[in-house]
Image (cartoon, rainbow, N blue to C red; front, side):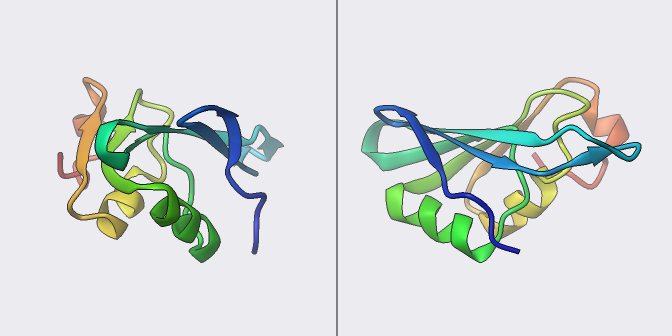
Length: 104
């Protein structure tokens, strides 16, 4: 399934929005992408990656940081960390108990 591309918000700042359901209710999900110095990228609250989104990310920089900011916005953090194994994964306090599979 192809989704909308990264949407620019400002210089060096984008969002990627994806459909998401929670207990059958459509709530959506959004990842913020920040381009830091040296074209390094920080992905905040990662969404599911498809080939198109990964190509867009790779075109604008190098994914170096992935942030799972709380105990709700973590669903795709493990997959994104596996896709970008050189990236540093930061997780919210307490998330390690809920997601022991996340290596940070």
